[in-house]
Image 1 (tube, rainbow, N blue to C red):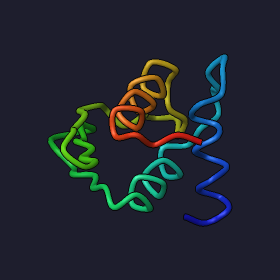
Image 2 (cartoon, rainbow, N blue to C red):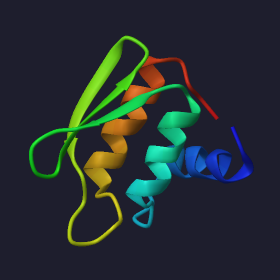
Image 3 (cartoon, rainbow, N blue to C red):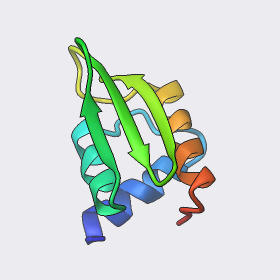
Image 4 (tube, rainbow, N blue to C red):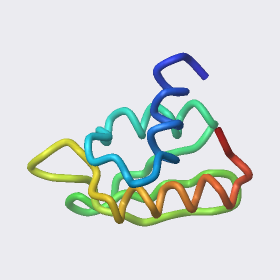
Length: 84
């Protein structure tokens, strides 16, 4: 995991939820943990991390994730034992 990915991971766990986390940065972080992002129909994506998966919509037209999406991704990371 590189320095930028470490910063994004810290941002995901920040409380209150930060509102400026870009989807592309989270995609990179997921790849850093050997996860996969599978594109579905339209803006739907499935994030697979270990044995868990999460279905969300990618943000559009903006690039930043919404707070509920950040909390869902944080929960997925916690379920996999990924902490700061």
